[in-house]
Image (cartoon, rainbow, N blue to C red):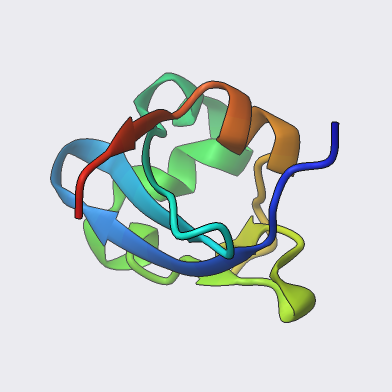
Amino acid sequence: MLQPKITDVEALANYKLKLRYETGENRLFDVSPYIRGSWYGQLRALAYFKTVHVLPGGIGIEWAGGQDIAPHELYDTSVEIST
C-alpha cells in the first residue's frame, strides 16, 4: 500500500516528529533510535533537528544535510495521535 502524502512536519521535544498526512491523520514518529553515527548523529543537535521539512509533493521528509527516513517507515512505525 502506498502511504498518503505528508502535508506538514513539526519537530517536537525528545526527537519526535509530528507528521500530518493528506488523509487528515496526525502521527507521531520517534527519531531517537536513528540518531547514531556520523550521518544521523547530526540530528542530536536540536537546532539541526528542527531543520526538518517536507519534500516537494509530500513524498517524504528531509533535514538540511540530506538525511531522510523512508516514507513507509515513517508511516508504518509512527502512532496515530489526536491533534
